[in-house]
Image 1: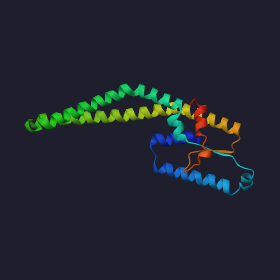
Image 2: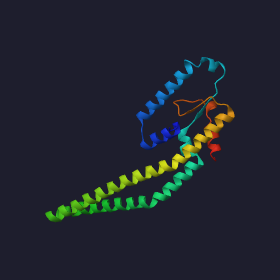
Image 3: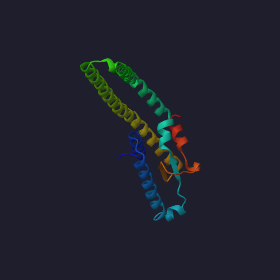
Image 4: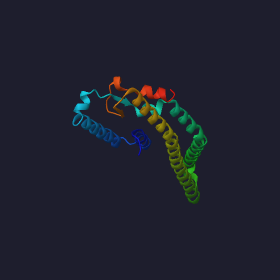
Length: 187
């Protein structure tokens, strides 16, 4: 079963905006209902609640920064190749625009096809690059997610938390334990 932090990672990598907000709102309503209705005796006993910012964990933790640097270095060559292809396409398109009035019909068609082929190749390579990049990032971040989950569980057990929420609409700084999780993950 995926943890909440894994689900958040998946949502971030897919760029889900409105759907993610709906999920967070639904989660908060469910948690609120669970705490409000049957948990009156638990609240009377003093429920200890904590909050962890998944976004900060995946952005600011040392393992996340190291993974991001590793992935960027791994994909730098391909990114440079895409930039080179984009520049080639741009310069050939400018040259075509400049030469088009004096070209023969057959030469103009030939160059238009070449530009279309270059553009198609560039778009295909960009898609492949983005898919590979996202897949690789998710692989690296899954280890970070596991480490964060372990740190959160450890903190919850040691400090007696009854509930730790990952992601919320609004949070009081007094229940935010993100810094503790970052520290437990090595910074």
